[in-house]
Length: 149
Ligand code: IDP
Ligand code: MG
Image 1 (spheres, rainbow, N blue to C red):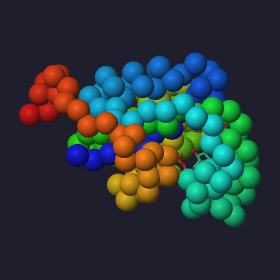
Image 2 (cartoon, rainbow, N blue to C red; image 1 turned 135 degrees about the vertical axis):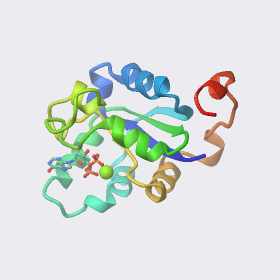
Image 3 (tube, protein in one colour; image 1 turned 45 degrees about the horizontal axis):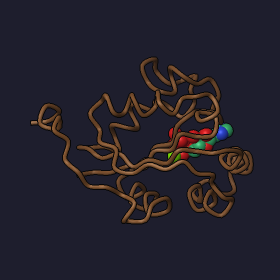
Image 4 (cartoon, rainbow, N blue to C red; image 1 turned 180 degrees about the vertical axis):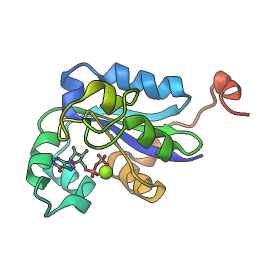
């Protein structure tokens, strides 16, 4: 089953949106298989955001993402990457549709509450940056047969 990395960014933690974010993904039917509260180091953030190195917003992004605790999660489900991306909404919350996490909960492109991997390949890389294999938990939920046939 597909897995994706999700972060509640420092703004989301400070604003008390950890539960809200988890609740939305959980209610959708995705399964939480990894979870930790942590502070990203400059080294870890450079690895995670390597694709943005050199862009005008890069320095601000690194200083923001390391400015306070984040919640790192791995969510599992059919097409989990696409499902999370569509539930997150557009990168710029002003362009994100109502009903999405960014469209309902954010106003600023930097402080946009949530990160989600943008492809299955990126998801694998990002998951390995944040989690050791033994930190991910495989389990059955009794409700799973009521989520997908
Ligand atoms: P994504 O988070 O929707 O995948 P990316 O393009 O991967 O968006 O950018 C990573 C993060 O960098 C964004 O979530 C946002 O916080 C920040 N960012 C992206 N573009 C800009 C920008 O033009 N100005 C300021 N911050 C930006
Ligand atoms: Mg991205």
